[in-house]
Length: 500
View 1 (spheres, rainbow, N blue to C red):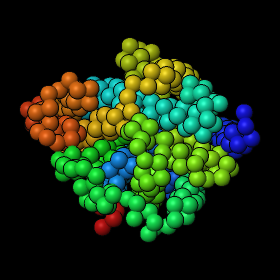
View 2: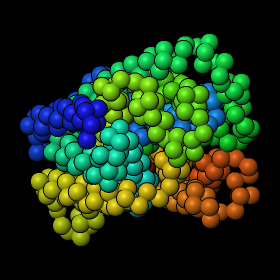
View 3: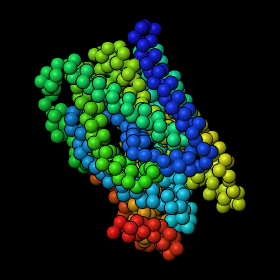
View 4: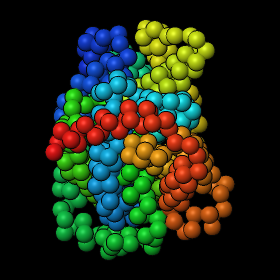
């Protein structure tokens, strides 16, 4: 092992020790209650909410996959990610997150599907959406594991192999989620988010100067890298649905993001986050996209899978040795700030929305301590399953994440209907969610014929199918009892009356 690799590993190790230490502090503060474990007693202030939502969304997709696409297509990728996504995603945070928080505050709900049982006085919709949320979250968790293994292997020149890098990061994120709950993930997200933004900014300035500045970079770039259509034709039927649905609207109902909105101290914090989020989102992706585009000049000829490592490759070739370690810490910050929250959200839904109500229907009442234990055991089981999938590495980060995002986008109409439309029924939600998620899964795995998408990104027909089925089936089936509708909508009506 040469001195450079030793220094890189040392810097990454210092970062990881800091993460463990913060997670340990959060664990000491945590109470043995489900409210504290899952939503930190609804105590996340503005900084914690902003950084936890921002950090949780970036993942390996933002740090590795997005620069890879920019390497191939150019700045047009900004249309995919910030043209519509940041503003549509922000609108989704408010539309769903605000009302979910009001219900959670009034009735003590602790998960994003908790209220679906009371909404119709029946747990069918709650069970179905809970299963789909976990099913769609697993691919999202998977890309974090793949990214962790790739980055540690790359920056240490193979000294830390892919399997070991993924395992080490998995163990740490599992510890944070297992011991510190939502408070632990939120505290570490602040630390990780600051490192992530700082490192990428330093990296961007350094590579910009090394490549000779703007005039030198532009002179070497293919002009198509600046064109709206990118380097190669891009269909509006592809990028508009992808931007609006996959990287935009889906964020409103992705469970580890929605549960963070439910953890805010007040709706005001959610509203302020909606103003700050687009700025952070756009700034960050401009930097990572620029690094990907510049990488096509500095290190040409990479395949799409190889280009997923373009930022670490740039650091290895052009940056000082210490910068490689900092970059590794920055990318791991993005990955880990999402991974622990995903594990926690999946475990909370499993225990609170599947195990608990199923056992209750059979006359078995779980104590908070027992439910807490079940949730933590599920974190361990899910971590083992994900690690097995990480070793298989079934597809590119982009392919895996796109399926997950498209599936979540198909759940948006169900949440919107449940929270805004009194006539929405449980059967509308069930049929809409199951059919549309099945459709996008068949498209993602190339089972559905190409004509079925009408030359659009498969998220678009999936979303349309979800919306049409929700409305049609709801109108054909019996609505919820009046008392259930009143229980929910009186909460919103009181808020609006108070605001007048």
